[in-house]
Structure formats: C-alpha cells, structure tokens
Amino acid sequence: MNNKTNDKYNIPYKYRKMENLHIVFWLFKDVAWCLSLTLLGVVMIIPTLTISIIIAYRTRNIFSELAHNLAITVWITANSFWMCTEFFGVDHVIVYGNITMKHLAMIPFVTGILILGYYYLIYKPSHKEENSTL
Image 1 (cartoon, helix red, strand yellow):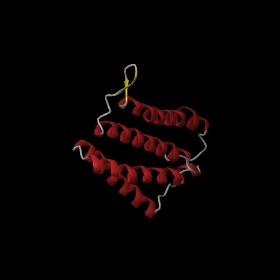
Image 2 (cartoon, rainbow, N blue to C red):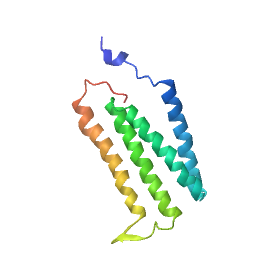
Image 3 (spheres, one colour):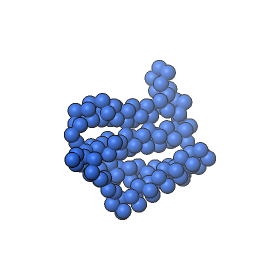
C-alpha cells in the first residue's frame, strides 16, 4: 500500500481562521483600490501582507505549500506596490526608457513566477517520493 495516497494534510483550525481572515483583508484592500479609497487601501496592505508572511512561515516544512505561499506573498507585494503607484499618482513616472513606476511591480510578479516555475519544473519532478499538497 502506498502511504502517499493515505497521508492527509490538515490545517489546524486556528491557522484556517487566519487564512480566511487574510482573504477578507485582501478583498478590502482590492475593493479600496477599485474605489480609490487611498487610506483604506494602504492600511489594508499591512494585515494582508503580514498574514501572508505568517502563513508562508508556518508552511515552511512542506515545500509545495511554502512555494505557493511565497508566490502569494510576492503577488500581494506587487499588487500593493502597483496600487500605491496609482494612489499617489506616480504610476506613469518614467524610471528608465519606457519603464514606468507601475512596471516595477513586475519584479515581484516575476519572482512569484520563478518560485512556482522552480517548484513545478525542477523541485517536484526530482522529489516524486515526497508528499505534496498538489
């Protein structure tokens, strides 16, 4: 019998509550962005990003979870930076050539893609025996 198919990944209730609250904060941040509510949007970065970092830290022993949670953290970072450039009217400011301040959000977006690319293309194929949540 293959133990891999019988293993279960359980999220402790207190962690699951935090993850669900994280979604609420994230939605408030993005709704504030959509409605141009600068103060609320900027304030919501703090709990959204903080909880994302905590979740990534708590999953550090399961690489599949860590990789995805780090990708979420850098996504929130990119998204928050982009939001702030729009809120503060600097999104169109040229940094270099045709690159604007808003385009700098691509750095964490690409970082997230690289993390997941590494996980799916290199790590996961070479660790087939390892339990994964994916």
